[in-house]
Length: 136
Image (cartoon, rainbow, N blue to C red; front, side, top):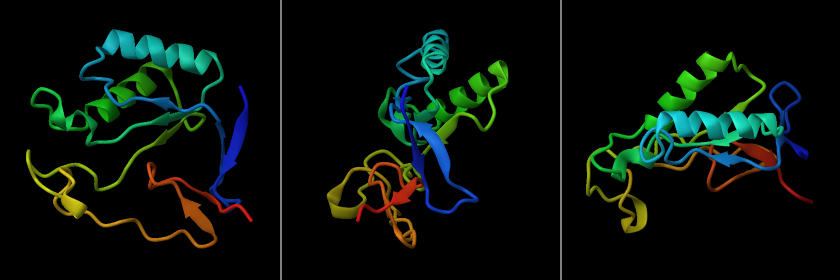
């Protein structure tokens, strides 16, 4: 597995695997046992960067969102996983109710605003909490 540094501040930057595991449907369409097996294999292969969001399962069969993050919390506790695994999530993306319309007519959050810019960095459009040094 290859790794890359994210973040510019020495106090908060992290080394993460270049291959991130998307946990979009863990805890909803992907059952807990299967999700745990995928997560375990990913970590065995050297993966350290998992992507999720509290809004993903909102549109799945009456889900309320947050299922993936809750499953990841249970998995971390059951395996004794700590800070060595980075969880990237989106902030403020959970819809308020079905059918709400967000910016640009997007059928997502009714109240959403982009995160503040990270000085000297460029934020990923899909992971608002992850900032990395802008290329020169």
